[in-house]
Amino acid sequence: MSVLVVTGGASGLGRAIAAQAAAEGWTVVLVDRDADALAVAAEELGVASTAVDVTDREALGAAFASIAERLGRIGGLVNSAGLTRPGPSEGLAVDDWKLVIDVDLSGTFYSCQAAFDHLAESASIVNIASIGSTRGLPERVAYSAAKAGVVGLTRALAAEWAPLGIRVNAVGPSWVDTPLVRDLIASGTIDEQQMLDKVPLGRLCTPEDVASSVLFLLGSDKAGYVTGQTLYVDGGYVWAG
Image (cartoon, rainbow, N blue to C red):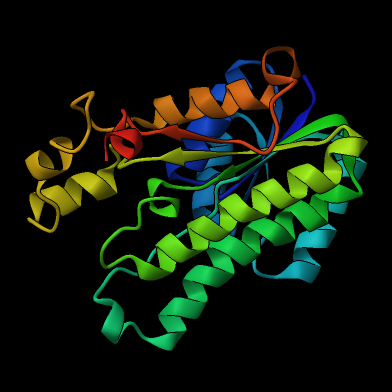
């Protein structure tokens, strides 16, 4: 397997994706702005890491150049760095709007740009979108807008880079069973039963569900004719309406 860079790799979905990729033989490099969490994750997973903020284009470019110089051309890129700032749309602070767009959408684009000159032939990029990209999530206006942008970005890059043999896809998870979501359920911020009633499969998405879908799209042996697509890993939430 070749080199795989995972942004937002210090925790959450990024870490789960990195763990599964490493187990499948990829040479994984974690990228994250949280240097302390990054060091812990890299040591526990036995992979390389680079501390950098995806909104810093210059630093990101230098990081990808360094990765390619040390480990060789990049065969896969997973853009998992993201955050949200929930709350009523009419009161959302401009700084919160800009932060979510900068990290979730612009950061994804900047990573693709930074990786481009260092990609191997038949490289594969997977961007992390969300059910919010197509359904819209109340009190998640910046997040929904950013993730809809990620889907559009994915399609545009897929069309532009297909002649070069580069595939670009996205994965759109529903609510993922993470400690953060469990805390929101425990605090009453999220009604678990109300949430599950909207999911035909009747359970939360797991980080492993998402990781398996990402690894499928990364693999040219299994998904080599797939590009420009968004795979919703949502238990049927989107199509169920």
